[in-house]
Image (cartoon, rainbow, N blue to C red):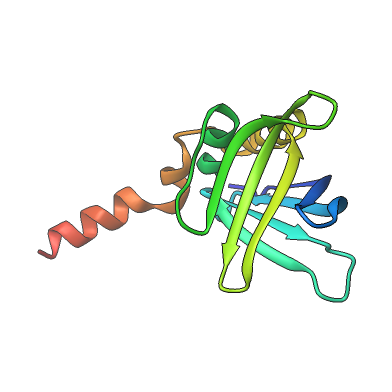
Length: 139
């Protein structure tokens, strides 16, 4: 299979109770080589970009309802203009970040990834079935 990737730039909003919100440039990445994961690079052009990796399915689930536990959680909401948005909470030992993304842009990014690897076809690319058979044969 040809190696295929999707890169999608978005301007998100970093939310803060103290300072309001500010634009947060981000680059969403997807690769058929790691078909279950999405990588988001925040402030990619800065001296200290920050990357987070999470499940593609989690991103999709967050558009429809609260999803995720632990370090990453997502839920549907509205932006300041009343348009559909996705709220993303990233938690680390340094604190929590609350980020707002356009739901339509996230949907477009996901649609592009699904054209590369349709939902449910990820395991074929990972060879999980073959690996499980191999493991079970050796048991």
